[in-house]
Every structure is written in C-alpha cells, then in structure tokens.
Image 1 (cartoon, one colour):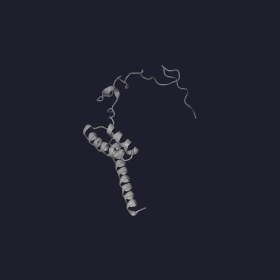
Image 2 (cartoon, one colour; image 1 turned 90 degrees about the vertical axis):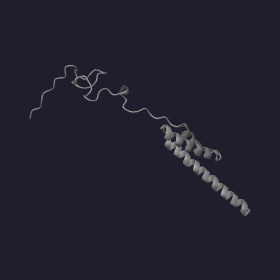
Image 3 (cartoon, helix red, strand yellow; image 1 turned 45 degrees about the horizontal axis):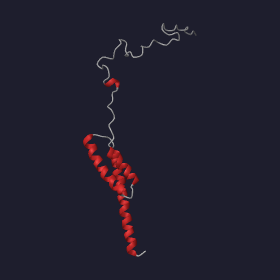
Image 4 (cartoon, one colour; image 1 turned 30 degrees about the vertical axis):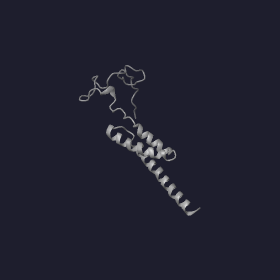
Length: 127
C-alpha cells in the first residue's frame, strides 16, 4: 500500500493554509457580493433597533411588588392600565411588565378586601 507524498504548501503561506481575502474585502471569487443581494442596509445590521420600554409599565410592576400599604396596589392598577393603552398606541415594549403590575395590584386589593372582611368579622363577634 502506498501513501501520497507530502503536499506542497500554498504560495502565500508556508504552513499550507489557503489564501484568504484581505480584511475588509467583500467575499466571493469576483470581489463582490452575490448577485441579487447587494450590500446589507444600515451598515450591515439586518435587524430593527430595539423598542423602548414604557416607563408606566415599569412603575406599575415596581408598585405592584412593593404594595406600600395598598396605595401601591391601587397605583399599580392605574399605571398598568395606562401603560397598556400607551403600548397599544405607541408600539412600545413592556406589555408583560404592565400585565404583571396589574395582576399584582389586584392581588394587593384582594388582600385588602380579605383583611377588611376578617377585621370586621372579628370586631362584630366581640373577640
């Protein structure tokens, strides 16, 4: 059985690596981009810039987490519903945060109602 002899290295590289185009040169054998594609728009970034997050949505979620003696829960509901409306109109991001603020606001209001019901039941029973 015979083995092939050693290969001669490429002309430009003593280690045998193939020649690469210079940095900044477009790819392709003819020095350009493939036909029908052209140069990418916006400096080569094919995606849209990120949307900004609605500030009312952030405030709603933070107030829903903190509660602040149930005033935070009420404000979380107000800010959350306003944020949802602004997000629909402006196309901002933050819909999930607004939803979280609304849910946490309703949870806080639910605890307030339960506290009032049990507090009133306790005072009317005489304990």
